[in-house]
Amino acid sequence: MKRRNFLGLAATGTAGLAMTAGCKLPGNNNTSEGANQAAVSEIPDYRKSLKTSFTSVKGKSAGDRVILALIGAGSWGTNLILEAAKAGENIQIKYVCDVDDTRGGNAVSQLEKIQGFRPISVRDMRKVYDDKEVDGVFIETPEHWHALAAIWACQAGKDVYVEKTISHSIFEGQQMIKAAMKYERIIQCGTQNRSADYALTAREYIKSGELGDIVSVHVRELLDGPVPFNEKKDTDAPDTIDWDMWLGPAPKVPYSISRNKSWIYYWDYSGGPVTSGGSIHQLDMARLILDNPDFPKSVYCAGGRYFFNDKRDIPDYQMSTFDYGNFVLTLETGECTPYMQKEGLDVRLGTIYPKWMQNSTRIDILGTKKMMYVGRMGGGWQVFDKDEKIVAQDKGIFPLKAHILNYIDCIRTRNQPNGNIAEGHRSSVLIHLANLSYRAGNKQLLFSPEYESILNDSNAQNMSQLSYRTGFEIKKEI
Image 1 (cartoon, one colour):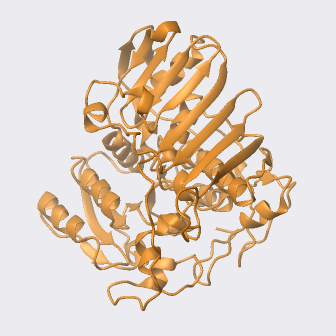
Image 2 (tube, rainbow, N blue to C red):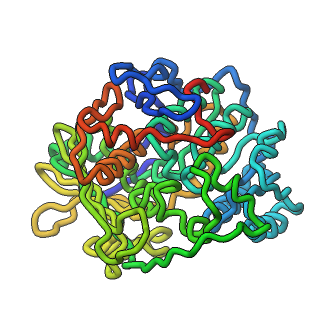
Image 3 (tube, rainbow, N blue to C red):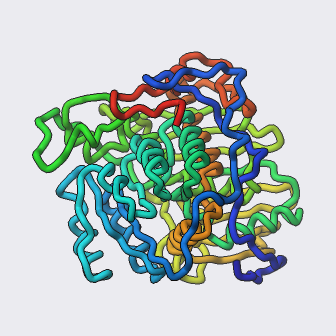
C-alpha cells in the first residue's frame, strides 16, 4: 500500500485485512432439510477454525496462468469479468455461465476480442466446477444463489469472488465461512471499498483521536425514484431459460418475467433495497473505517411502501438503527429521492470530492471533536471543524480493479483477501437483522453477539430460518 499524504495526517495502509481467531460469527439458525437448528446457547463451532492464510493448498507463481469463470452474466457480471480479463495479470477466462441463453453474449464476444479465443458458454455452473483447470469463479447471480454457488465452488476446489450481499440469511454466511476454512478456499466478497487506500487512511485518522470519541455513524443509500412496478402474470418459461435452475434454492413457482427480471422486489431472491441497492457497500466501508466492530446489541427498522400500493414484497424506504453500546449506527435506504445523486466518474476517477449535501451514498461519522464525510467508490473523505472548515482529507479512485487484482493475488499467495468472508459476513448480518426487524412489524430486535441469535422475537427468528428445495440444500455439515 503506497503512502498517502493529506492535510493533518500521513499514514501507511496495511496490505490486507486478515481475519482474527477472536472474531465472533453467527450460529446456525436454519431449519431446512439437511440442517438442524442449533440451540440458542450454542457458540458457533467454526470460530476456532478461522485462518489468516492457507498453506495446505499450493499457490501459483506470478508466471502461472490463472483460469477463471463467470457465473451469472448480467450487466454487472459482464463488466466485472471484462475488468478481470483486462487486468494484465496472466488471466484467462474459460467459461461464461448463465441459465438464460439471452444473457452472456456480450461478455463472450468481448472476451474473444481481449484474449483471442471464445470462452465456453454453459447453463449449469456445476459443469464449470467439474473442470479441474478452473482456479476461481466470479459469482454474479441473484442473491438467493450466492451462498450455495460459493459453497459448491469451495467443495470443488475453486476460489471465489462473490457479489454483495454475500448471503440470504445469517445461517448461509456461517456456512460459507465453514466451507472456505474447511476446503482452504479464498472467498473475496464484492465489497470493493475494502481495497480503497483512502478507507484505510480514514481509519488511521480516527485511531489518531483527532475526531474524538465516535458518537454516531449515518450510512445512506437514497436512490432516484419513486419507481412504479406492475407485476406480470405467470406464463410458461421460455425455452431460452432453465427456470428450475434459476430458482435453485428458492421455492418452486411458475415462471414470471417480473420475478426473472425484477427479482430485487421479492424476498425469495433479494434482501430488498438495503442489499440490492448497494447500501452494503457503504455499510461495510463504515465498519472498516471504524476498525471492524463486532455485532450490535439490537436493531430497530421502520419503513414501508409509501409511494405505490403494488405487489412488491420489499419496502421503498427503510431507516434502521443499530445499537453498538458506545455508539449508534443508522442505515437509511430508499428509492424516492430524485434530487440525490451518486458520485459520477469525475469524482470516482478524478481529484474532486463529492457534493456532500445531496450525495446519495454518503457516510457521516460524528465525533466529539470533529465530523467526517466519506464517499464510496473513490469519493474520498474530508474532516470538518466549525464553520465548515476542512482540517483533513484524502482522495482516492474507484477501487474495482484493485479489488480484482487482490483476489487474483490471493489465488496465488493463499493469503486472505481484503474483502474476506468473515468481515463480509459481519456486514451482511446487519442487513439481515434490519430486514427481520422490518418484517417482524417494525419491532426492535435484541441480538446476542456471542451466539448470533435473536433473543426477543420468535417470529423474526422463524423468518431467519430459510428452507431449501431438494437438490439445492445448504446443509449444516459442509
